[in-house]
Length: 379
Image (cartoon, rainbow, N blue to C red; front, side, top):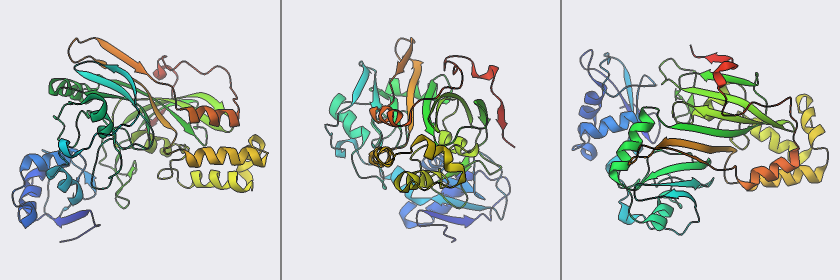
């Protein structure tokens, strides 16, 4: 058995050409005492969650393309979490303040603060959004699993913004279909360190798990899942740039990865900032400029101003990515609902320390981005 990390284990497939991946993985797992009773449906769920890789690439759960000699990796930690979820009754409700935009017997719409994990997992044992939801609403849907009451979609721990929550299983199924069928509409804002190469654009690059850094995604492979992101420059906050973003798919880390692909590091996102975030923080602390940083020293010439901005960035428990709008059909009435929430207050404080520079009039985020946006095609 070949191991690629503590959380992953792998094997070389030696079976029949054209075998389904879910069948091959199930057979392999059942040879282990711990997983002797694992069901194929659980393996299929693991595959859908990106927990099985074939030669380092994601695979559809029913794909019949296995070839002898292919290497298959399985995320063992994720499988354990699927098989042994934290029961809802073991999630202690917590009185965490939440902004509630809407609530009825079918759904609730809330604003997730940055720094709050959506649901418990093996790697996250602190306060969670699910614990807060149980406190505020009591009974929630369990269609997504006992460890994820009410959860239909997710935001990264460090991302803030609008989320819809299912309070019944019927509502959960309706909302899940809407996300899968792209009936929902999702708009974000991101504050990035460097401006994009064009004021607006479309990024159409497949995304898959990074072959070496398993906790990251990337666009450099050949078997990634399709991902479509549109962006438009909204404002310039000094040398920083505020982007309006619309996504039409919901891949893991999609916005972060796509912005990285065009050289735009989200403020505070050290995982995908490729060193740019660290460079900015170091400049704010020391004031030392190096060539391309001249724009920074022009924007923040005073040490006190730099240190104020540095304190804001370091104290903020997330990165500067915000889910500001969400639209979907109400599961019971079919009415199109739209919810919006402003960026967190700390963003405004950062804005106050950077100033605003507008290059003409930014387009409204409600306009059709396709009319003027260059494309960044995959390939």
